[in-house]
Length: 170
Image (cartoon, rainbow, N blue to C red; front, side):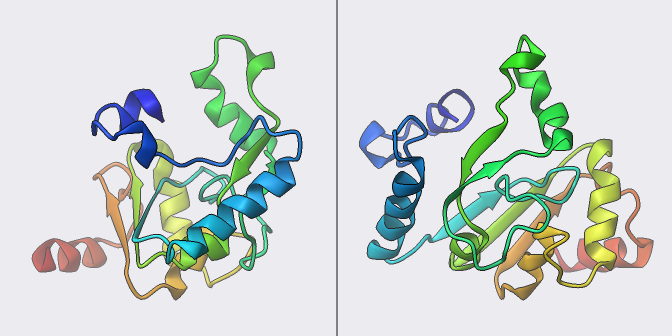
């Protein structure tokens, strides 16, 4: 996050807030993080990616939509997908601290970005799916100001008519 986002934006360190993944009481740290967000009036904007299994913010399939920041066990698929960031497969974490889906949905605006051919299947599934905890990203369909940005590869399996309509509107 520091290398690819915070440093690039020149964000002052005092403006960067993350849950404490090294806390002895990780659940307590998660609760404190959600409480701090609420105390500050919520999130103005939530930037998300999507996992190949439809997770958002590491909220794996069947994470309750009512969840707040929590510790989650990562699926084997998520661990495989993120293994590219580690030198040794044994270094890939088995758990993560993640913003809960309820925290995400309370953001004033949401931006989901998906790029590359490896996101085409999940984006097509998201487009065709009902709102269901089996596909965490489907929760975004409930949000009035969620925007999805795709490159042509991630959009490859979406209906052509949808893409033409959106390109004209944009």
